[in-house]
Length: 365
Length: 266
Ligand SMILES: Nc1ncnc2c1ncn2[C@@H]1O[C@H](COP(=O)(O)OP(=O)(O)O)[C@@H](O)[C@H]1O
Ligand SMILES: [Mg+2]
Image (cartoon, rainbow over the protein chains, first blue to last red):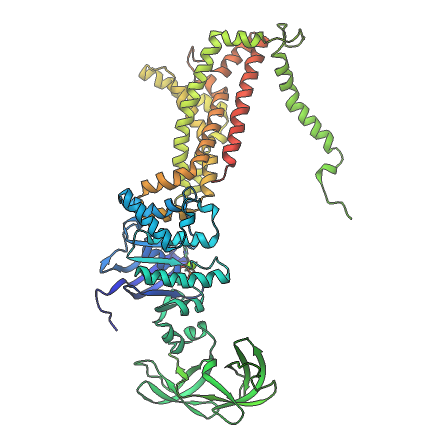
């Protein structure tokens, strides 16, 4: 579906990046195309080595594509050096200048742009306030904590008011609690500044909680782009379904596609309704996915049946592992916990698995 | 509890160490002690006196050679440090490429080629130039000293650069600094201790050189070490000891400074 021109902050068109030459050549990016809209919080999500950093470096200008175009509001910037791009980066290692104070770090970009002293000073003060670091303005960056360094790195990159802010796994060095705090902080900063954020992470939970849209990457390719809800509930293929959250994979024969819904006949003989992606025409056998929380464990007969093999308590919910009858497949059901009540099943129990009308999705692979 | 292995507990270790220390330091201690000898002898003690220091400091030839040594060392060390800084940037701030090792070897050539060979080669080379140009000033000595000082300046600068995160320069470029601004505002201030260390090391090396200087110098261009060498040929007086002692003190001071500067972190 073509995007509206002019509304895209960044358009990546057919970009390839090959490292090495001859037999040793590796395509870190294999013909990637994606559009990032103005003012959105866009996340590149994928396992380590899938090419996220490479794509970000091409947008920042630290490296140049082997083929393809990168448009910033319609202008091809693919070959501009980094200091000529109105795009700033928050580095994974923060890369704060150790010989400068917090204020000097934040003012650096504006100073390089040749802004008058008074304007730099005012903007630095504004940024310090934005990231709540006023009290540490004249500290050396080696004399502040990791979380504070993170805020300075953010303020420094935001100060010149870039058209796009690039963040390469900026939270990965922080401990769990601080990371949660910074996730909220980042969302707040994005809302407050209205700057387009391109955020890189390998943490699917982080991607789901923070993003307006997510691009899932694997082996140098973008597999799916969509809202967190799209990505989670309507994964396009096996990799996406598997990488994001927990999923049950079932084999089914597909028939009668209508209005994006199909009848999927499972191996157990039961037929369920499953969603099909736009324009996808599965033929015969296909894989159907059901999220553990979209299925329900029941005492009587249901679409699937099996034997409870394991009950795992998680505090907010309980995961029940069921070995399906007539196959060796494991099916996981997740149930919300109630206070002072067990989940009602024990290891060895026979149980049915009810799959609702809107619970299943047919995969493309 | 089993004793952990320590080389200090090996038989003979203490003896060998003692012999080495005596061999290293005894001659120097004797030299320093006799610099304060009242008698004009470097073997018979005649009481304490500072007269050799006084006579050395009033000797016009000593003063002349000392000034020349400092002049050459200052100019050569500065030029060598500039060249070494550029070489270090070029060999660490580019992605590795074939031929890089060869360039390291080229830069460090003076560490590998025997000084006497360089000395003879420069003697022949410069004598040709002297004939063609008629110039016979200090330029030859300065050029030679600059060349052999480069690797000594290069090593600490390169070490410093290799410990410096490339992402700092990248961050500067990301924040709209042109390559020159990034160098001025980020690389250079962080590299400064390395440059200073390189400069001091080059200065000491130049100050101390005998072999190449002996071959390259024209008449009346003695440096302090070549002057001392010339004097020793005519028999030693405690004045040489006094000069050596002063020289030693200077070197110790500079090298100590070098260690402090090069160990300094950001
Ligand atoms: N400078 C480089 N030279 C050679 N290969 C590289 C270089 N940078 C990245 N790669 C390769 O490209 C692939 C993608 O790397 P990267 O973009 O860093 O992945 P991610 O950020 O998703 O972990 C990896 O296989 C990596 O080894
Ligand atoms: Mg990465």
